[in-house]
Image (cartoon, rainbow, N blue to C red):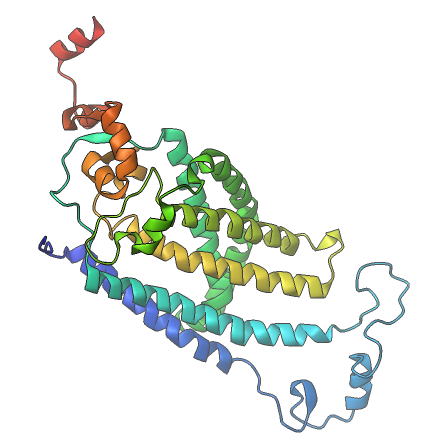
Length: 362
C-alpha cells in the first residue's frame, strides 16, 4: 500500500477556496428568493394592494380574455399585449432554477473535496518512470484547449448572469454589478458561436477513438479504479472518458443550439418558445458545468501524471500501463516509448550539445 505524500500548501489553499465557493453557493438560493416579491394570498399574480384600476389592468393583461388579441402588426405574438407567462417564467428563473443550480454547484465542490480527503490522489504504482509516449498531437491539444477555454468563459459569464445578483451586489454594489453583468451578457453572446465551432472540431478530431468497445462495461462495473485498489483494464480512452466525451458533444450541441435560439429572436420563435429554450439552455449548461468540475479534478490534481498529456502531448508509460493498459501494450509492441532525455529534447527543455547536433545532422 502506497503512503500518501505530504499535501502541498498550494493544494490546501485551493481546497479551502473550493470549500468557500461551496458555502457561498449554498447561500445563493436564500438570497435570490429574498428578492422575489411574495404573493398576497387574497390577490392573484402578486398584487399586494387594492388598486382602483385593477379591473382595467386585469383586462389589459387578458386574464379572462383570449390570450391573443387583434393587431395590424403582423409579427409573432404581436396580438399579445402582455405575456402573462412571463411572470411565471421570471419567478421560476429567480427561485427554482437559480436555487437548484446553486445547490448543484455547491454539491459538486463538496463531493470533490470529500473524495480527495477520503481517497487521496490516485498514484501510479512504482511511480513515474520518466519514459514517455506520445498520446495527443499538437492539433488535438489545440482543439481540446480551445473548447475548454471557451466553455470556461461561457460558464463563468453564465453563472454571473444566473447567480451573480445576490452574490456580487453586496460585494460591489449595483453599479459595478451592472457593468459586470452587462459585460458578461455581451461576452456570452459573442463567444457562444465559437463553442459550437469548437464542438464540431472536437467531434471530428476525437469521435473515432471514443466509440464504445468490448471491455468498457467491465471498467464501469469496477468503478473505473476510483474505488478500491484493483486494476481496471482500459483502451486508449476508458469508458469514463468516452462517456464524458459524448456528454460534452450531445449536451454541448443542446446548449449551443438553444443559445442560438435565444440570441436570434427574429427567426419566428415566440415568447413561450424563448422561455422554454432558456430553461433547457440553463439546465443543460449547469449539468455540463457540474460534471466538468469532476473531469478537471481527475485530469489534474486527482490523478498523478494525467495532466501531462494535455500539457505536452506525452504521458508517462507507467501512467499508460496503469490506466490504459491495452493501449500501453500496443505502445510497447510498436516501440513508441521515448526516454526521459529524448522527451526533454522533444519538448525543448534540454539543449542538444554541439557535437550531438553535428552527429544528428549526418
